[in-house]
Length: 355
Image (cartoon, rainbow, N blue to C red; front, side):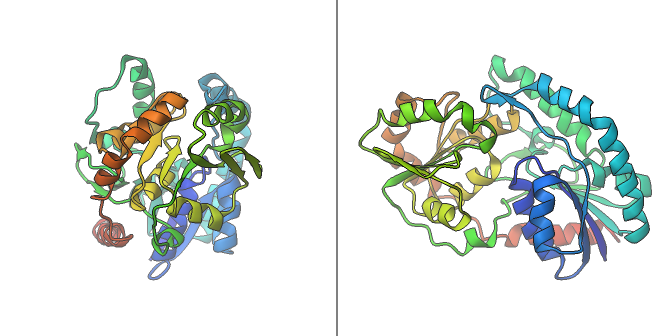
């Protein structure tokens, strides 16, 4: 079967997840990929001659949070020429590769290609939880506007797919038909790594906001001298008392994650999923303005796996560490049999929608 697989480049979580899914699909199907920027380079290296480069949408950040104004300005500036580029690429894909099925990981190009050609469409991502599941936690008044905006965007992004497969490290009740939850898709280097309890706390901050936060974070961590922190995300290798800054290296990062005592991160889905899989308590401080991250952080706390804070402070970290044994007990109950459940469900859905 011929499958067209589309994904965005905003963050690398989509790319690392898609890399695993595409490798699975290639065992039985012919797959072509559409994506942009970093995700394009990442997947082109792994799947030569299978990737089409398109133009994608990017978020803009200001003062450590998503800027709706700057993001909209960026879209207005680049949108028209990007649309022309993607329209031309549509005809190239249509001519060279006529898929029997389209899979979209929150990608608009793949969605429109499926609809224009009346091709069966499957949605695979974690973000559809905002639209197709009941969020079982109170949404603060300050987040209600972000929630409405995020839900409307998600609802409009890949509407009327034949089926929605939602990856999630937490349980949520589906409220719409043709929707299933499966455990997160994990890369092989995570699945083959043995988890052990070390003495350091791993901290990760996304590079998109790092320059706005490094001084604040260093000040906070130096107020907790009895704890060793390993920090990724600032593209530096330095030692500052109890804080070790490290430049990103995939193998080194996985080693530090798998041997950490606990994890402090934003609300990015991929890292939180990997931390929970390794049974690491998590302190999550989501990026402001990204309600998807707020949801992930809220469910970390609701599941009893750790704490959710709006700001990172020494008092917040001390509060998190005080209950670390409780969080460790709870996250030890998490069970996931690799990617087996997700792949089994995906194969079943492909069979159903292409009959």
